[in-house]
Image 1 (cartoon, one colour):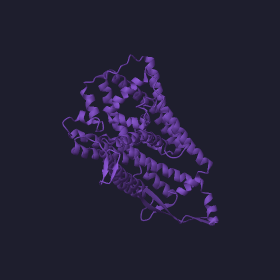
Image 2 (cartoon, helix red, strand yellow):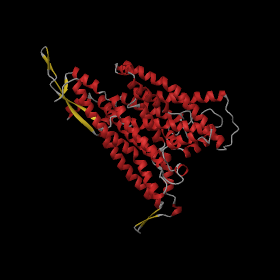
Image 3 (cartoon, helix red, strand yellow):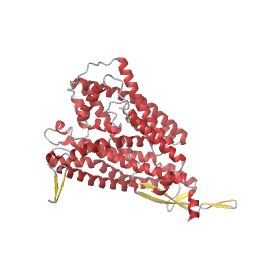
Image 4 (tube, one colour):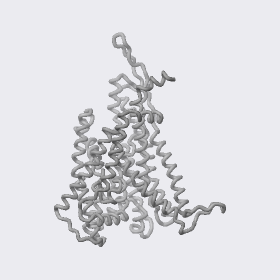
Length: 478
């Protein structure tokens, strides 16, 4: 990273404008998270949300990626979930339907049309999820004996669903605006901002627990006494060490790449000659970035949502209870209720499905963003070739072989990182009889680190672009 160049680029008006757009959108996003859904008494539904968050880590993850929108019962409660789901569906159809695949390869115009279809599909998905969330929350207020004299009418439902759908579409528009007018991927940036916005609350709760000396203080080697809870202190210290190790591993995985040398044939045109140079084609170990984790979480959330709806209608529904138990992340809040007799084989179902989906989505998304046939054709048109490999189809097969090998290691590594919280939970279950509940924070850490690295690279590239004309002046001064 060229940090000196990044700081130097802040003098550029375009760079400052892009940072200003990002900051302004994030501030507006946080303001939207404070606007309640127009449905009865907001405090009543907040109480229902609080009960729901205690029952399911799926709900906790929704609250995390919506920047607290679920806990505050705001109009962005649905968040970016419908857009992410729509993207998954459209990309799957693109690979399954040849006509759509041809359209996606038809340059910017084709991709623009596919993006438009993704936006259109987002609307009905947002409506369905809005209805489902309000229905679940309203039924939770009734089944939880929460005091309320409010009975929603058709007009109340219409207004609330419209507000939540509009909130989801506004978030989608904000994300795309950051991508076009800001720096980096806007959707990833919005999710990043959502997770970061929850850190002050988490740190405050952790600090309160650490400095609570009702259970005694920490005595170090008999010569220093610290006013902190000894048990919480050592747990937090262990988490910090583990977090540093995981962050280091994630940075290495994100920065790891295979360099392929590309040679360009020398061509003569009139009195001028072109080519005869070498270039590089970098292929990242995890080219898909954090997208497989987000896709896997969103994909697994749908059965849990269906189960929540079924249980809201009929609390005795065995199918609904089975869906919630199977497709909800094992956590400290739901472990004792779901597994009263200790850990069973069902505990491993969610982590296994999560690992498998992360693995498969890594391959799937890499095949979309790294089209070996298109790259081989472009190299051949430009007179480029890989030494020892024939241009055209042979180059495409060679690149596919390299990418598949890298994907195997990258998918396994990404899946292992996603499994670290579950492994930690299993160890605590064996040692203490209950999990510590790091599943969501582990996923959040994975998203934060990966998106931060991607955005830093985007900022670095933009900084090099806007300061390119200054390099000659610097050399003259030197």
